[in-house]
Image (tube, rainbow, N blue to C red; front, top):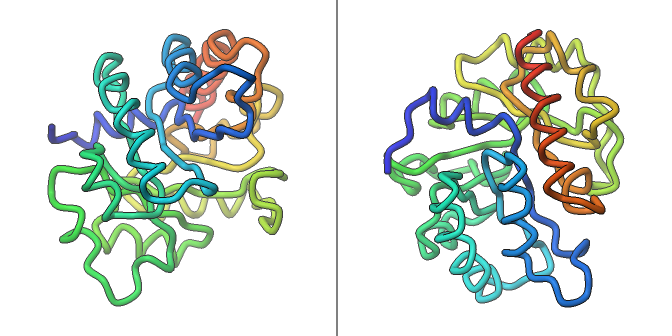
Length: 219
């Protein structure tokens, strides 16, 4: 399936980034992801740093039909090769993955390409490399990336204004601080523990989506 720019912008509203470390005994990642999509998650990134390639492909095999059922794109983190092998809808890459490679050609024209950016220059470079969206952060303090420093929201505004592709904010985002992103120009929020660590994942997704829509609407 080829996604239009409007499709991708809408999919960024509530961008769920998987984290199996929050699974409770007996739960599978697919089960918890289904709960998130029940509540309104609009995109799912498979990001499991502790799994090897075979582990990623095994999880993707379960998640792909599930995401298709909900109409939610499945993105694989960090590896074009694994994203292609899994038949995922796209891949998300870091700045280091751009060096010396035509990543758009490797990904192909039909898959979604997301690239991380922390500066205006990185955002512009990501767009030039063919990114469909950029992930910007960490916007707030986060335990997911302990070396990430929170971003000044004026810088976030400058980044979103510098590119024509949509941006999703990531890093330490939860129900208490999403509305601080109103007016920054982001198309949505990417969340990890605010969703996967929740006691009721479906209810958390429902609330986070409503808040994200509010922040975007006031942007």
